[in-house]
Amino acid sequence: MAQNHIQSGKILQYTNSTESTITSGTPVVVGTWVGVALGDIADGATGSVAIEEVWDLPKEAEALTQGAKVYLTSTGKITATSTDNTYAGKAFETVTSGEATVPVKINA
Image (tube, rainbow, N blue to C red; front, side, top):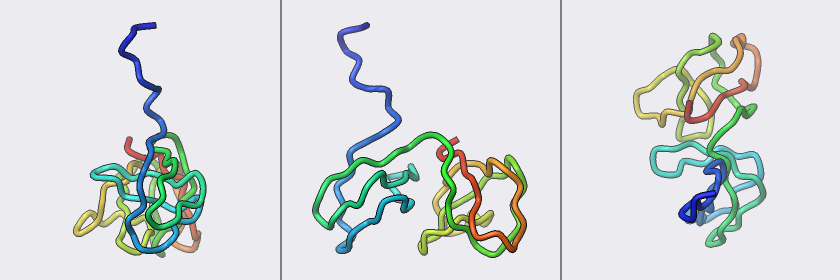
């Protein structure tokens, strides 16, 4: 392997400055990326955040179609609305408005 390889790039270390604990499985905005906390991250602590793959994330009460661009709201829910939200990736499956979560291929 090349001498300058660092890592696969699927997980990064994130320092929590939110003034509260980020719980495992919670979506996290890191710059322009959306990641998922792989464990609890206390305020001021550093923890692992996944920035690839498919994750089941909480969503707003709306239907989403497979392959649609989705965004993370400031309340931590997935929506199809881009205005004032952070691009999260694409809906991995079609879901109805009554479903609480949606599988998202993050940063896709």
